[in-house]
Length: 341
Image 1 (cartoon, rainbow, N blue to C red):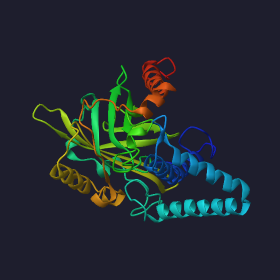
Image 2 (cartoon, helix red, strand yellow; image 1 turned 60 degrees about the horizontal axis):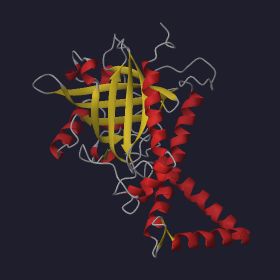
Image 3 (cartoon, one colour; image 1 turned 180 degrees about the horizontal axis):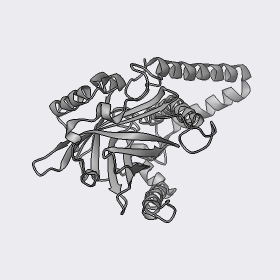
Image 4 (cartoon, one colour; image 1 turned 90 degrees about the vertical axis):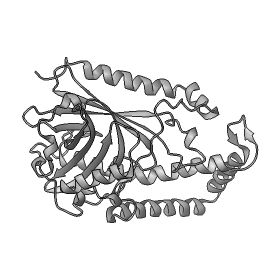
């Protein structure tokens, strides 16, 4: 990869400034998400009767008391702000040191090995004759090393579709969250408990099958399809993807995804994927078992969750907003009028 020669903050997804903003955003998002989930757990485990079968009176009373104390006691408010800032900085520092969660919050730069590998260095023999058209459709993510993801979510899938000319792809990344394990009392009350989507766009290079320049979260980075496994009919059944973002010789981000066409994967199959990633030289970048998060999945066809909170999200139009985002994204992807010929 090369350092862009344009201005340091040109908003084209490739400059050092944009990459720094990308890193900073996720460095901050993880410590902010954790207390949000904790508050949800406090809310839904507070004792006593509920207001309109929705919120415990005790939780409301506790919030009124806390707000009153903070408004009348400025020293307490200052002490709380200082404590929260200290906890935030400590969490980010632990992420930089790699002592929080190596799977989803390893914020260290150039840890393990310097920079990013070339595709030739990680590409496996299974990629010989790779046909991207056979790569389209639904993939289930079974494990990841990726700080743009959160270990608190689950049931992550990728739906890949190609443009009519075969030169672009759309990655419809879907998830649910938080997971029952991360939030046992509140997971089914979340606005995205029934799913949400994020979309990444890729440009394919016909000269180098298996490599695309993917754009998402404001940056553009190479996404390598390192390995695929096939069934007896030649259909792709498993895949290992590797993304790596480098600027000025420094690795800012690496992402690793273990994918399968099936929502269930045995421990033996997962161990085999780790071994293929090791052979590809990806362990220094986070592909070892201790550096990846295993993703649980719900059985296909599971009906949407229905409860008072889900009814409330529906009443304010959250489901319509999520559906509109998905529809407009697919429509924009199919519109080629703004693409350079």
